[in-house]
Image (cartoon, rainbow, N blue to C red; front, side, top):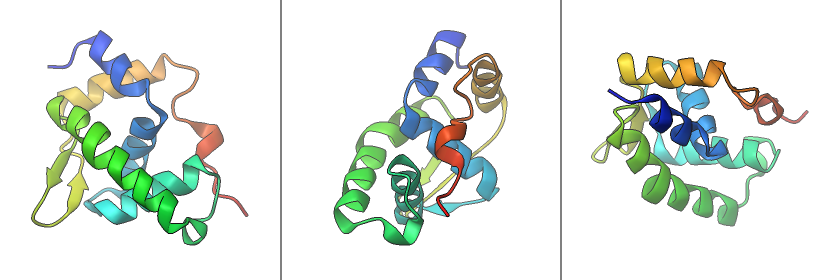
Length: 117
């Protein structure tokens, strides 16, 4: 079970907030490259098709080497290396993080959720 302190640590990163939000909206598995593209697009306030290869590569590295491991260690995502996708397993750890998020003014990261026109 994730404690409140760890829940806030998870939400301390905008990239992790965006990963959780994207997976909540997807309601299923999302490919790592697609998730990296979506996070990079929101982070740089671009349409997904406008994300450069460099921005995509940097986002993928951050997600795969920093954010996915932390989220997986807390039971918040499942990363399937064979299928190269990520899912939300749901359950108590995710509920705990979402409850902590409800207490934050910055959750969900509304300013980054709107897609540019």
